[in-house]
Structures are given as structure tokens and as C-alpha cells.
Length: 229
Image (cartoon, rainbow, N blue to C red):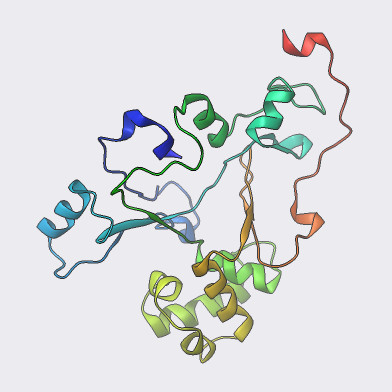
């Protein structure tokens, strides 16, 4: 999304996690990945400042991308939100504007634009959420999820090694093959995410979309001129 704003071209984009969440698995969910011959301060700084795509990239995990209204279970793309004049089609209150819509308002480039010689990003999701999706857990906080998470982290050393480097065969030696397969599907981009909105986290979908996973909409009322004043 940042690539769509030409005014940001002179900056090297990095991805760093916030630490205000009380859930430990939220810490470090955003990070920077380096492929360096020698791990040193100067090598890291040079990779970032030169924006070298062969040495530097980062995982991407969107949170509240779409516009919506949590109380009414309404989630809208920027285009849909504009059709409703920025108002919730159920209760007529103002929608909470999502990141994607704000980017759309500021962008001076098309959605598929990528500058030359720019570090890319890796589409990864937190390991705990991948496990929770396979198990059908409502939350990544369950003991069943963390039992499997700790097995993988203990075997491979850390979460990113599991997500990026471990082979399917190696994963399957530690956990059920369904979880190993899910990790590989996320690594290769064979998944989709129901976008988050208005404080509601996005949800990972690995198979056929479950209607329960898609934000519902209440009884949509017909718009009138007052909605656009």
C-alpha cells in the first residue's frame, strides 16, 4: 500500500511490531528479515539504507484493512464504503474508516504498482493463528494451540524458522501433517484472509470459505439524500 504513494519513495520501509498488546504472540508479529553474509550492525544498516531487495524484506500481516462497523457486523471495501457515503448501511452511524480506504484516498498510483529495486515483502501470518485455524479454535490463546506451538518452536528454535525455512517433512515429524501443510500454504501464498475492520481482526481461511467467517450485514436500509449531507 505504501508503494502507491510516490512521496514515500525516498524512504526505506521497515516493519516493526508494536508492544502494547497484552497477548505475547502479538509481540514480534511484524519484523524485518535479512539475508546477510555477515550479521553485523553495518551490514544491517547498509541493507536497509540501500533498500537492497536481495538482502532485506519483511513479513506483512494486515490487521484492520477494511472500513466497517463492528456493532452491526458490517465490513466494506473502500468502493462499497464510498457507495454508502461512509455511513453504516444498517444503523446509519459513521463507519470506521479502514487503512485500505485511507490509502485509496491518498494514493497517486494504481493498486498493483511496485517501484523498481525495492525490497519486497513476505506474506506471513502468526504461527499461533495458523494452528488455531487448523484446529478450529476460536482463539490462538487455547492450551491446545500453544502445546503445538511450543513443540514447533522447541524443535526449530523460533517461529520464523518454522514459517520460512522448515520443510514439510521436517514439520510433519513434529506435528500433524495438516498443520505442516497449512504452514506451507501460508508460505507459498495459497490462502486468503477475510479482512479485519473496526477493531475486529482479520481471519485466515485455508479451505472453502466458511459463511460464519465472513462478516455479516444486518438489514441494509435504503439510502436517502440525508445520508450524503
